Image (cartoon, rainbow, N blue to C red; front, side, top):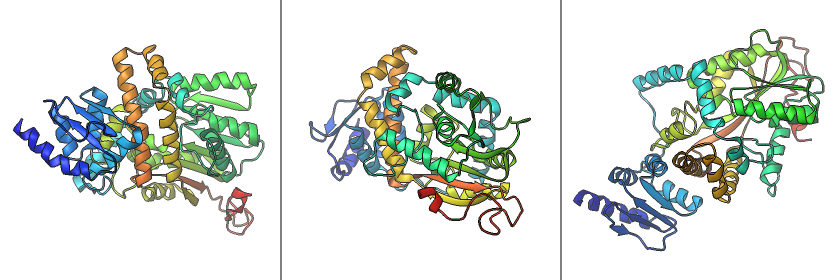
Amino acid sequence: MGFMKNLLSTLAPLLEKLPVTVSVQLPSGERTGPEDSAVQLIFRSPKAFAALVGGEVGSVASAIVEGWVEVQGSPRDIMAVAAGLLHGDPVSHTPSWLGQTISKARSLAMHTLTHDSEQIQFHYDLSDDFYALWLDPRRVYSCAYYKDAGMTLAQAQEAKLDHICKKLKLQPGERFWDIGSGWGGLIFWAAEHYGVQAHGITLSRNQFDHVQRLIAEKGLQGRVQVELRDYRQMEGVQPFDKIGSVGMFEHVGSANLPEYFETIYSMLKPGGLALVHGITAGGVSNVELGAGMGDFINRYIFPGGELMHVSRVLHDVASSGLEMVDTENLRPHYARTLWAWSDALEEQLGEAQKILQAQYDEAKAAKAIRAYRLYLAGSAMGFEHGWIALHQMLCSRPDGDLNTGVIRGAQSGYPFNREYIYR
């Protein structure tokens, strides 16, 4: 107990510097901080308390999910505390040569066809009704685009879908491939508003079934197609005029990123455009957040997920033969998106519990909700601080003909002028 008291005395002055009031209760019942604090932490595990003092906020989050720590307070206040208790920058770590070698071997092992399918289903097949509680009506599960400051989440997601379609210069009759098509937001928008023949692939059975139902309901048979298929299994499919990939390469793994872009290159017609939209690392060398945050995400939310700095992603883009023609950083847009999701979930926690309890036992349902509450708010915090980012990378496959395009040497349909996007 003397050790715990020493930790408590070490923590007390740190708590006083935080932007919100905090109280902490030890397993012994001893407390520090005002009783009416904005954030209250009740520890049932000495190990979890030691993690808090050590700035391992991801480990504390894991303890909350497992029920070893009880937390009370608003998500924004809790994340202000988490950020304030970090010891240093969670993206500054540069792994050793041995660490990089081990990381690459781990990435290869984690991203086989079987493992990727299992990992996608672990996350996306949790419960469609649960996701529908806090996503927009189109269930667009990626960064929105707040083109105008007053937009609602639903409006910002439609603005994002249109932003992508405009960047790709989609034209009626073109064949459009969406790698990792989710609940169908982009393929339906592209088909209905731009007249393309849209082809989506997913590894999620729930998402596949949902899109199939929508195709029938909307009468879009022959214009929209979805398959349960891995991006590495496109044999026998003709190349596409345009390609989109939203929120996908985070699941690919660093070791498989070259193959991913080589696949995009081979499936894109010469002169065509591809847009890759995904989460990138804030640090140049790290593949996950430090302070235990990456471990938390990998364990409870996205097993197998890996983040690369945009410079690494663009390196593999170029190595594949694709030419990056425009890159846009939407980092704070994702923070606002995540807070919108977090607020929506917080407003419907009782309904979320009912939905998940209908599919899982009470304990698993409660753990899942605790994990997602922390994941959504914690990710919003990460984007706000710049520990993670969101990039849209528009690429072309040059056709080798210097006369292709509106300006000599373009070698693609990209006009090398951004005006067309914003008209």
